[in-house]
Image (cartoon, rainbow, N blue to C red; front, top):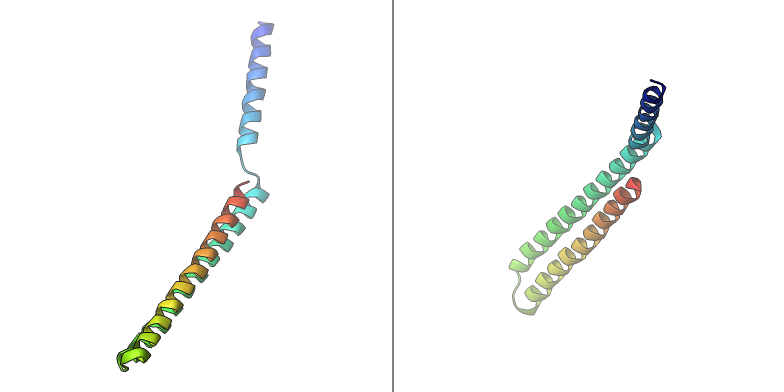
Length: 106
């Protein structure tokens, strides 16, 4: 009987320890939530970067449509460069957001 009681106590203690280790603390949850909020804001910023560049490039292409020859080509090339530059910047911002999330998980 004593060995069964000892086994029961040991099993309950091990189970409690496993539950305690598996649960996030309140502080850890708050840290993860803050990181998620920050990462979401960074992704929103990346979207704004893309949208803003797209509008600017579209306006430049509309202007280019009223031109001809080398001037038109130059304006369209500049619009393409704006899009590409914005895409690189937005991708870097999204990569940084991913890093914020990854760091919060560690």
